[in-house]
Image (cartoon, rainbow, N blue to C red):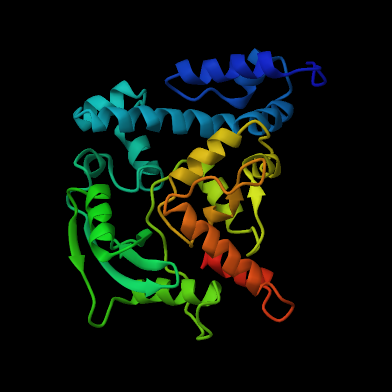
Length: 301
């Protein structure tokens, strides 16, 4: 097989189309035959081009179809079939990570989920932190509590939502303390980051993990981060991953800027993005630089 073709684009496109059509995920060997590349070369080239492996691409594509069918009101069994899954067991195997809940719960707009939340003041305005029984599901910034609570209600329209203020729950307090500590808003030692309960694709998780490794006060463009992930043509997909981030400050998407260095937008307001970056840069002295170990704690708890 030719592993040194001047351009693998046609071969990779044939593989992608096969993944789009296939109900069952083809083996890497089968895809390599289609591409006329060695399996190892195909794996590397496909990840560079699309930001994920062929197997991940197939799984994410199928779950995208499943989510669309569920949002349209299809019965779970029918949606599973239409998305090309051979059985419901394969769906439930990955549903926690890719849907954030079971398919039935996703279809019902989060019905049955119990969310507890609180709000607090920060140097950037009000912050809301919310958690399910499995982990932190939302961290948002806004001008006032009404705005933040409306946003939470729109995000989880059928979940049970309960405000917790007096003696706030351990996870909520831990997130507030951890953010304040790691962003230099407080010198008080903070506990480890609680678990997260956020639905995302495999590629989004890769982007979010990479964002947590950008030092405070440093910015990167969409293209720079795409190149670091081995997917130089995925700048637009990285922008979408940043736009889908529901964990303000925990996943620091404010450190991503446009190719010309301008700030671009931010889900929680470009003015806050400007102020946050300015605060981070002013804090980056030899005595206050954020260490790698602190960034690791932010990324992994």
